[in-house]
Image (cartoon, rainbow, N blue to C red; front, side):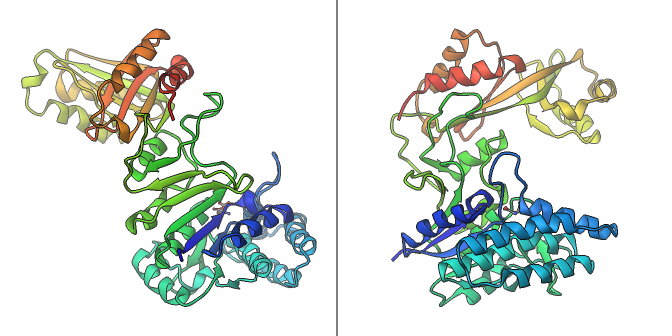
Length: 438
Ligand code: ASP
């Protein structure tokens, strides 16, 4: 029988109603043996996340102020779940301990981690699965660096032989046993760590969307879901702003070649998106997804015969490095070199950076063009497929979008297009509709 590790995000476990959905999902497949919960998230637009409230309690306690009001709201969340599900766990006792620890000066990491800890205790009771505290095997060094291999070894030992377990997400421990959390959203990472350590066949990441969509639904109306995406494609899309998962959560499972299935707790009948190492089946569609961002500037440097001047690009880049500017893309021509950078990085320093470039390489001109947007058209199906870029640029031309920059990665898996920010939405839609396929 296969083995599945399931992680549920905060909105999937926000109240008793959501707990019921989670139980139905977990118990409907006996392969779902290890469950990694987040803390209760928002129940509705404008609601509070338990993790945020715990951080706030700790800050107030640190400043010697009362945190009774917020802690009462936290308690209500957990006792509400406990009583509505008629659980036998004495959650009031656990809450009392957490409150006392925070009042006694607990760290922010400890306080924040209690959301997952308490939710894990409730969920283990509800599912009838053993509770295994993540601090036992998710380990950091004294400086707070996550110890991937050490963790994998101990996790394997701790979880080996267990039929099933609930392991709270988001945290582990320092060598002295104190609690250390991952960055926000880090329960995704915990799930991936557990999946790797038990040699899971699949890591299911349950959230409130049915996986990744081909484009941002705020820009394109009802975009199609992505059924299969490779890690590499996802990296390109995530870099351009498409995020559902914590970026670091990919690494443990990628290393072990375990596919991730992103699914929707509120629509479990949908298959969601499979994230895999390799995939061929792109059907008729050359592209997997489109993502993009606004807020870029292009610095264009021009110099006659720059192509024969040894070290020209090096000098331009050195001037940018000396100013701490990171480079997104660098399309070049025969006598021009353009560097795309984040507009934020240039703010208030434009003149001095231009002067530094002038001093470094004595060009004929340096121009900065602001308010650019970048769009990444990503797809493993593009490799060796004739006509994909023609389709992209025809679609853009038909909508009157002026393309200012084109860059194709050597992997041939993406085309990056630079356009004016104000044409961003029109451009994303034009590309999406040019690739209507299943
Ligand atoms: N509860 C934590 C947060 O809100 C971790 C997570 O949900 O992944 O960031």
